[in-house]
Structure formats: C-alpha cells, structure tokens
Image (cartoon, rainbow, N blue to C red; front, top):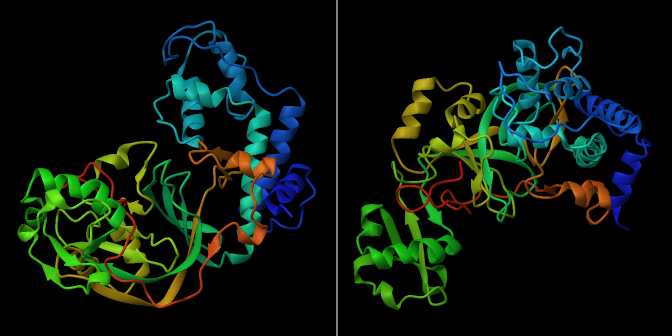
Length: 411
C-alpha cells in the first residue's frame, strides 16, 4: 500500500486530528485549516508583473499588493488616503512576508518576491499538507532535546522542550545531490579532522587538477594511499604517472590533512547513517550570505560550528573549543549522552506566533507527498539509524567545487 499517498490524503481531508500533538504540529494543522478556508473563498488576488515595486514609489499595482498581503498579514492596512503610495507601513509588510518566505528582506517586490506572492492559496494548502505528512512520520522520534537540520530552510537548530535555543545558517546538498533525510544521534565531535576524499570526487574533480598541476596534491597537503583492495600504504604522489590514471583504473585513496585548505574546517559532528554525511565547519564563508544555500555534495556546512560545539560540550570553555579547532589532528571527543539529530525537509512550518513560513521545494518532494507517488510509510519518512560504532574520523561524502584547492566543504 502507498502509505505516503494515503497519509497525505488524510491530512488534506482534515481527518488526522490526533497525530499532531506537539505545539508546532498543532499550529501547522491550524494553518492548514486557515489556508484551506482562504482557498475556498477564492484565494488572494494576483499581483501583475512589471518593474520592481520599491518603497517610496507610486504604482497602480500597490492597492492590489496591499490586499494580497492583508490576506495573510493582519497588520497590513488596506484603507489609506493615498492607496497607490508604497509607504513605510507597506514596506514593513513586504519585509515580514519576505522573512516568512526566506527571501532577502529588502522591502522591494522584485521577481522572487512577486513569484512567492502569486503562489495560489490552494498551492500553499497543499504545501502545508505535504509537510504535515512528513511531521506526522517524525513525531514519535522527537525527544525533549534535538538538533533539527532543515535542508529546505538551510538551517541547523537546537530545540529543548519545544523551544528553539540555537539557530545557525547551513549549506546543504545541491539539487542534483540532495542531502538525505536521516534520523540518528550525534555521538562524537572530531576536531581538526582529516578528510578522506570520496572516490567520486577524487576521480571527477581532483584527478583532472592533478593532471594539469603535478604539485597540486603536495601543495594542498593531500596524501595518496593505496586503496584497501590494493593493501593500503602511503605512496609518493610524484612517482605516479597521473596522465595514465583513468577514473576506472583509479586505485588510490586521497586523504587531506587538517589546515586552512581542508574543506571540513575545524570540527565535524558525527552521527551514524548509511549515507556517510555529517555536519561540519568550512573555511569558505562567502556562500552563507546567500538566501538559497544548496551548494554541497550532500553534507551540511554550518556557519558557526563553534556555537554548536559549545552547546554539545557545555563544560568546555570557549577558548578550549577555539584551540581544539585550530590545533591538532583528528581529536575525537565522544559525547557521554548522544543527542538526537533529525535531518528533515520542511518547506512549511509554523512560527511561534502561529504564522506559516514557506520555503521553495528545492528537491521537488512536495508534489510526491500530496500526489501519492511516494512509497514510504509514515514511519519510514526518515532513515532511522541505530547506534553502531562511530564512523571513521575522516570519512565523508562531500566537498564542492569552488574552494581554492579546487573544491570546498559542505559545512
């Protein structure tokens, strides 16, 4: 039986009343009721395209924009003396809308903001329904303390007793290499990790660089080992004729030492999972300023991992964490009490004031949930992982082209 489709249909029909017990789930269910009611009344007006609508300007579309925003935002006034003026109050309404939709909060109605405004109310109701289905599958596995990585929102959050205590920006898998949904436990932190470069990255991205620049590996502190099938052992990279090495014949394992060029940065968080993904630092910071942050091969880059490390290691002074991230090699710290982590894909959720936040469906999963084309039972929406032995310190699936050594980390 196609449980995903059945589950989504039940949510759409409003027949699931006992599944969502947590406050955030109940608020999202209430949001679904509101948006379904809005859709039943005909939804909201479409704001026509044209030049960007900017604060201080006058435009015949402004009254329509006010009406559109007021459908979701009770603070938006529709009856004002000069209806066509884009005044400061309307600017505030636009910024609130942009914040709820993960857009740049500049108060300007440009292409992206206009597109979000013109998503029909019926479409938003379907989006909420898809996310209720996902949350229903997760409800039983959320504990009083949990790390939630929302790939659709590009965030890492820590929650205690249904209250968010930490929120950090993240970079997640690109559209073609999406970060998987996982339910696991963070068991260890590894400071100054080495990086065992995945074979796919080694052959597709690094091998061409080595052919062009024979000193590339040495300069970037990447060691060459025989792969396990060849018995292991370190090799002299300069003694290998890389021109004759092909993707098929590649029989090496590349390991990058810690340092400013290592894409894993100063720390990574290990949680057992079958995809070999993890959370980690990165020496490349510029991408965190983007609103849409899907650039990695699947792992999750964290903007301020030292804050997450401080939360997980409350007895460690801040100076000790900074020192551990700057000195040493593969220092593993085991958590006495592993903390649950949920890597989720939520494109709609309820904020603390009950308003619904939306994000783009970057991985094109919402339609699968609501159309019934998915195939997972509610209890299988995430890959749940038992507590096996910790993964190898340097393993990982990720790095992304763009860093100064030819790739940059996901975290």
